[in-house]
Length: 460
Image: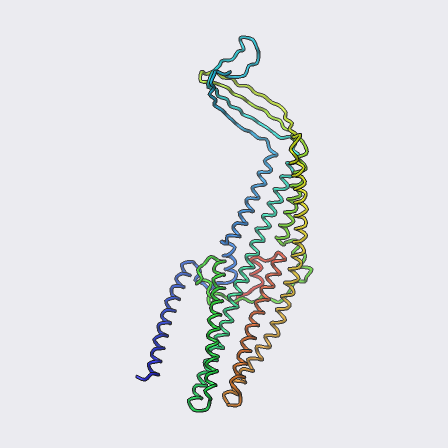
């Protein structure tokens, strides 16, 4: 057997082993995906739904929203009367009166016992509390802030899914373009080897062709690695096996239209719907209500009460009496705590008000930047689309001249590299436009599943 034949057989065996391994891996991946209910190709809309349903930060924000809603009930409970039942059992060293004395005549002297039992049923109502209404307003405002925070977390999660999904698609397309160039380089190497065998090419041409192939294969390893990282990040967002977010499982998306809403329309939408702005303003309202509650502590607290008292002992002696009254509470001296609390609450109100103004400015800045990004990506995409067609024609011509002997290998390889670079830039610009459009929707408070459905289409 000749060395060439052995080499071919060795390579065929290696190819068969790699193919078997790849088939085994693919089978395992399909089974894993099927077990997790993700056997169908993964769309962006399905990925977004899954992330919203299970990601911990979204669930935590929803739980805090529910907690804040319940806190309103806690604060409002101060408006209602209270009813409490208490009881004690006491053992004394010396006998004690079983129930109170209401006179000093011998017939009114109560029995004595060492073990006494006492129960009290008390109904109370706070007629006036200067801080009560402020606490209720604060609880409502904080519930509004928590609800807005939950909405903001959901929208930001959608944006993360969009960006991660596009990153996988983009790196997949870059790898595919690189594979096309690698295929062309291998074909060129084969052509040069044939020419070298017939004496129509120099050894340096073969060396250069082989070097280009080796460099492209090394670059491919890096591209495969960065693609795998993007797939893993998307899988982490969705809490699915990495096999479910392989690039081959993702359905590409394109913009449904190129219509961009006017800037004033987007600003108005952000003013009305941006959840981060709503959260900041609700937090400011809560701080102002807390400041009002702190100032309300300057006023006395007025309440009324009614009690039913029951005493007895082990000997069966007992008594039942009622009492009612009015209670006024006003701390005369608190060591400066009341004044400090009022000052602290006022400072917090000023800070949160400034935070709300800052949030509005940041949102305006974000809208301007996202709109600029959309226009830039659109313009770059239009130019790069022309460039790709032009470079493809240059590659075709260079290949023809190389085959006819009127061109050089360097010119052909340079043209291939230029085409690959233009294709990569075009893919990137299209995905940048989608990302910028979703960023606009995020800042204007419109990014949700319905927005994804209306503005992005699956491309078979």
